[in-house]
Image (cartoon, rainbow, N blue to C red; front, side):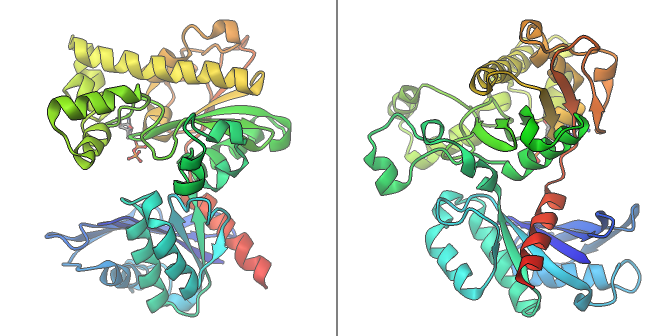
Length: 401
Ligand code: ADP
């Protein structure tokens, strides 16, 4: 059974074709710069085969046609025709409170989503919906499932997802904490339970998804009970270009001082702050780490702030969970950056977390990096959101038959 996983953004369309018998990737790639000059499809097939198609792509429908051409191409394709695709799984970042569980896609559902969910992820959801529409046009008879990233956080208790604002902003505007990266937190928490040799229901975990966008979740017995991102992905950790937690008074003060409009302020907090804004070097932590090593004090400050904020979240989630069995690192930084993992874990010995500095040198593979005498296990687990989406898609489609 082949499942095609689609992650569509406003100007990009990422795809993976997964063989579910072996859970292996047959082909994957990305159409970049949809609707812009210089669109290109970068395609990988059968492990290390690579192809690049440079072709102007006006919209998601054209992008999707190109994807199908790539995966069925006689030279670099992996299937003969689209009848070999059993189902398609679409990623959606946030479906508000209306769309939470994975759902079989129909034209009516797409229409309802257009009316009801765009505002919950204005940067992501329009692209995702265009991807779904394009896909349905080209493969009308193939079952499709939408997997919503916030699904994993549906188990957050009300006292964790409500803000300390007047209650009617929740009833009127649905302002509450939704979280993000749920598919990744779910995948790595399932892996971590396996690495502990236990069922997910038997363990308490803290999962750290540290990438360009970053979030930490507390997972109790298979269920997320808290997470650091909120109404939008701006809340929580210090990220590549996002400020994370902030005294809200700073926002209104700065808007007055700098004469900024709400959308300018939104861009300022989401695109110019965080590691980039503090260091003045880059949003990419590799550059910032190099600068810090070379003596750049602001770069070092940015690294220190990132680690300190993450450490505080871990401490508070140990309290929320009343203890933890394993701490899990994933995503670009979590999987690859030993300095950050060490910076976060240092000083947590009293809470039972101790790294083995040799083992911590690992990059990009599943590993136990905790010291022999660490009470809490510390794991590196490469995330695999696409596989998680494919599994959920299969389970919904098989449930229909
Ligand atoms: P996104 O959130 O956009 O998916 P990633 O998960 O790829 O991003 O994370 C991007 C961050 O991870 C960057 O700060 C980058 O420095 C770091 N990163 C990604 N890959 C590596 C790597 N191979 N080695 C070191 N750092 C990496």
